[in-house]
Image (cartoon, rainbow, N blue to C red; front, side, top):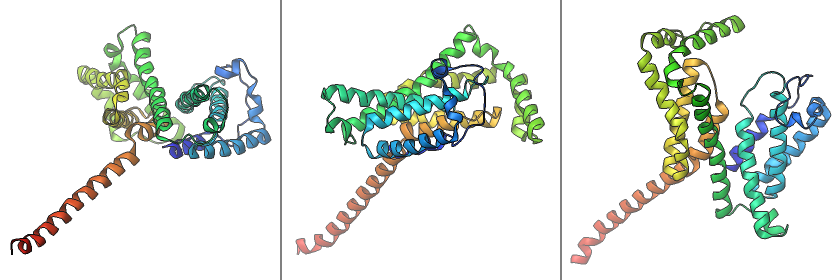
Length: 296
């Protein structure tokens, strides 16, 4: 799980930035001059340090130091990108997950009271790994709960009532894509706006399920199977949104796969079940072979 998250972090930090003016400071850019990220030499050095940090994070060494650097660089790059007049969510969930795990690493430093080898070096034991994963889950589901609450707050509680207006937004997206890349929308994307207009109540039911899923996504914290159920549901929701509205949230989907669905655990569970069934089958065959001899 840490290797997968480390790979996501490495792929998400760009190797260069085009010259830009931070005309709309956002996040760290309000307090720190982030124009140094446009310097190729500085950014190259930071990416070199990031390579070391993600390797240490994945291996379980120097967790507090590595997560400090990872969190700062993700926050700096995200702030830089969001300070140019447009907001995107590419680095937001990654930075939040890193920040939450940084808090866990800091907790272990405080618990050990001194900065010693136990706190800085091997932390890849069962207890700390569970805490790191739980912190990542909390950070991820908090994004969804915040999204649901924001929808209700900004619409003054009328978000479901207004969902048929999404037909206009989808039509605008289809037109924008055609004007940008001369690619006509597929049949589904083209038919959805009219379907929403013709069936507003079905639209409210469909998007209402998505809103409820976001609002109660914190139930994923109850255990592995609730996390798997919520994670798979969120991935399906994002896939439907991508097909209908051409809005892609690949980072959220990948984080859900890593920390909620937990494919390695499912694979281990499946292999364990196969091994158990094969062992029972072997025992039955041995019992059938030895039974006549014992009777004789």
